[in-house]
Length: 267
Image (cartoon, rainbow, N blue to C red; front, side, top):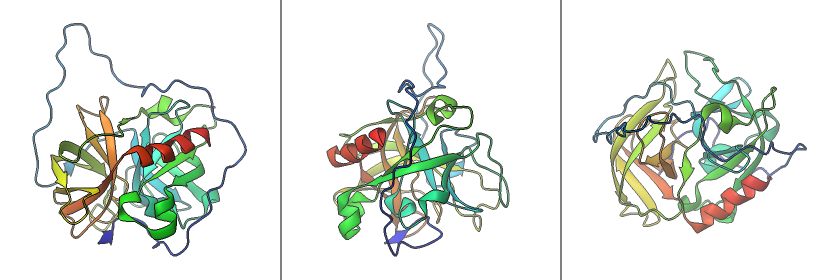
């Protein structure tokens, strides 16, 4: 199984480090989310697709940045302090924590642009099964990020999806990610909505078949109930690998994933 995303392969796991500085006590509401006016109908669910299409800007989804390089996709997950980001474990381990940042809404050729800035990663939390055995079913990570220079938490600026820990594997999901520049020279995110199923080869994983999810899309959120960039729905997993750009897999968030997430909310 290929790993979709990191510039460097994981050869050694970094120790989870916590840097000084307490999080700001912001609400866990995934703002900014547009409220509907009374009587306004909710947007209909997207139809299914067989190939990824341009996503436009989804402000809560971005890339991990390490110095001048960017790799993997990550997204903001609703949390009590508004400072938690989800990605794949193989994207967030093996990199120096002191230079790791999250750039929501990233786009643009070459080094790209950062419409919401970069948010310093303070701590990385992964499942012990990943640390010990690199189990595919534990290929997820939750990152705690620092406030920006204005003291704002990332969720209050770009919004967030709500984590769900008990969804079944058979869902209609919307997946948003950033393919690598070889297949995506302008660094725009792509999106696919399709029916996902339990992976027959990995029962603890989900599988989707949708073209265009090349290297770089590891960590992409799998969202159910997505109705647009301001109504993200619920995140049930993150893209971790697959055999081709068409076949992609994700570990389904469960009680074990929730315990890792809760560590990130306290870091």
